[in-house]
Image 1 (cartoon, rainbow, N blue to C red):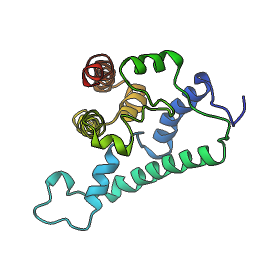
Image 2: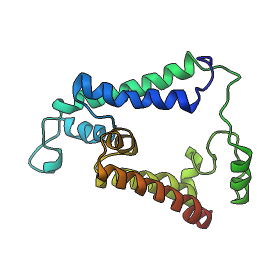
Image 3: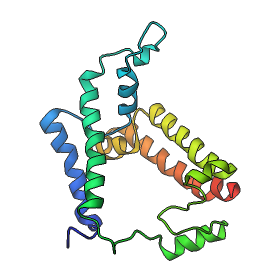
Length: 188
């Protein structure tokens, strides 16, 4: 196994799993990034009596940690691409996935995601607008409604044996399957 190749699931998965106890032991923190947007909004210097109570709190107590976590994720992704990446390494969709996407009418499969749906030019099309903006809204709304994001529930919540996290993760999977097999074919 080389640092320049993707690590197999049986190595990367346990390493991600070790993050949870490490965070709990070192700082009493949970892993998840959805609270960062709330902290960023609460940190804005425009707070007044019209600011919702949801955003009137001392964001510094948890916000610094959340900002550091998100910055670390961004820095890790950048370093992974620039330092550990190679020009020869490319992410490619599996042939079966490509065939399924072509059957739905998508043709530009040169990247890891179909460019007809996830590109700046896609925002001028109905399906692209629905997928990018509608999907983004639903993810944000769902993360708030579920009390956390997929990473927080699936990594921290399940590791802590929380039943609400199990329900949330099951909901995430059901929603993903519904989108993949029901909504996307109708949309395209």
